[in-house]
Length: 228
Image (cartoon, rainbow, N blue to C red; front, side, top):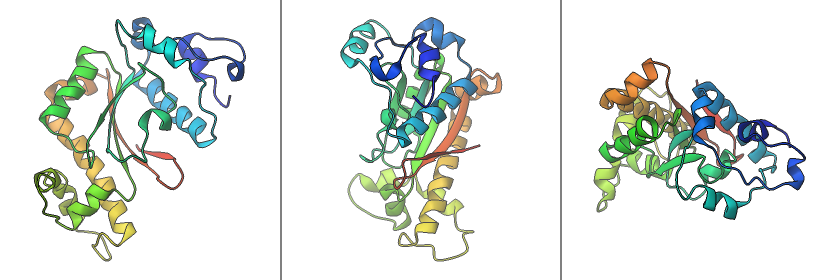
């Protein structure tokens, strides 16, 4: 394979192209990881995804081995968009990552609680907020759509639209460049909100126990760009 990081992470050896990965992340492996290592593994996994070289896995074995416990290395907050398959995007298996999804990848009390559970209680080393280009929820927020429960949901994204008013050009959902600008600002706003509203996660980040990072997924290429 293009990367041996999965081999190293789970202590495997041999020809990965001929072997299904049966092992799952353990408490010992999780504890040994640093946030930087997890981010690097995400980047390597995305490269495998881009080159159609995903790790062959024995999912039945992984299901059995995680039945009595889980030790995910990271939590990802992503959009509900069906074109953003988070586990595939980073070449991760069962038990590897927590995934929370909501249209527009914003944060609220429930998602904050989920993130605190993932990191403080369950030991995850990274909290990643991942937006994506041409996000329908962001476009709807730009257009100030009013429809049922979608209306209060979009209220969570409107701050990013307001933060984007310095954009030089047409501020419209029809302008792909403006949408991209708002998408990035929406990720940044979510990161800011996490740090403001979760003293638990903020303290963990300050101590270096976790990293809270953002990224943008390209629908056209499948590439993930980290906002570092």
